[in-house]
Length: 220
Image (tube, rainbow, N blue to C red; front, side, top):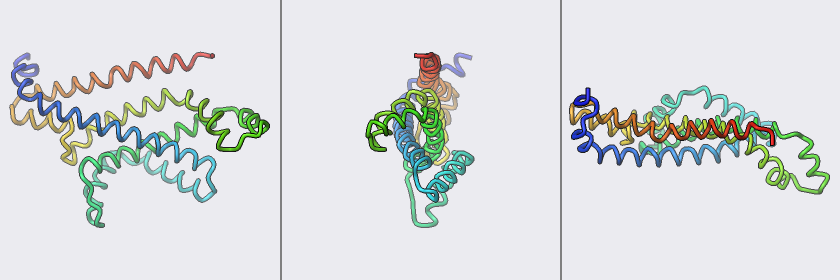
């Protein structure tokens, strides 16, 4: 078992590939999460306060990208867009696909958080003479943010896990590098190491979400 799945010599030889893949995976995950947050916030605000036709478009976007599997979207972006003259790198394709799906889920999370803030809070702001942007920035969004931290963090964990799908379009992420190292060494140790690295990154985040849910769920 040790020789097959936990071979130290194989791991040492494969480590440079695994390290490069890990760094690229973290870059892809961080960029996709940030773009998903920004896009989701914009979509939530447009869906709640935009004109009627724009709200309908936002609703259609959210429904479509929540229903579409990330893998299908990634393959469409990478393999289909070149037929209309738009060729993206594997990294750009993966970022676009992950951010598009993440923004749809983030939009629903933020929308639910905003709608959970009592309407009386906004009315009090209007009585004080605050403008609509000030009410959003100073009253509504700070209270909504407290409510959406746990689900946003959970969604970010899903984005990090979905970065493994980028190996389908030959991006040298952690999983792709582990697969190549496994083929070169004819030993599954690099795959076991890649799984351990994913756990090392994601388990603390899962524990953090659990603590946030307990902490923010308590009455203040």
